[in-house]
Image (cartoon, rainbow, N blue to C red):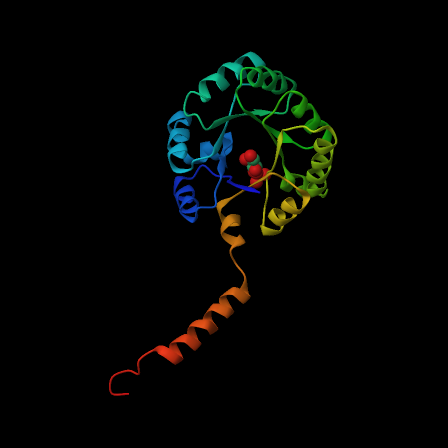
Length: 220
Ligand code: E4P
């Protein structure tokens, strides 16, 4: 499974990159706006930190404008993947951009039928939002399972990116469901490392080692 960071914060991206387990980045207009820098400059910096698919989202709402924006975005860096929303215009833009060989991540997916539409339009990635479905008291992970099954049934090559993940359990459940990619905030990636038995075990190993091999303190 590929791990993507769902952030545009450069410090978080640098920390994640140093761990060597980050395969890409997803951004969206809200995440970019939070950092307060022009989109192109910011995406270029992100591409310099993480060597992998970097999703940059269009903000236009009509397909001709989305297509123009998408063509411009991919000129920033060879790793840029254009993100289009799952609207009628977004799907028309996905079809056109994909036909030109431009990779598109179709975002804001909340149903299996929407995922089918994106695959048919030639999407490189589909982004179902698990957490936002949980927020309205449905089970977001069921959508990941349904899309995995449907794509398998028909051999669609579109990669499933579990998005809007809110905690470590979401990540392991998405992996069990067969999602190709999980994108997560930095704090969730950080949490994946934690286990109390790892800390307890290491503490005991080092205590035993030091007891056996540490020279006695001078005068002790
Ligand atoms: C995905 O690409 C989106 O940026 C993201 O996962 C949205 O997550 P949120 O629901 O926590 O905003």
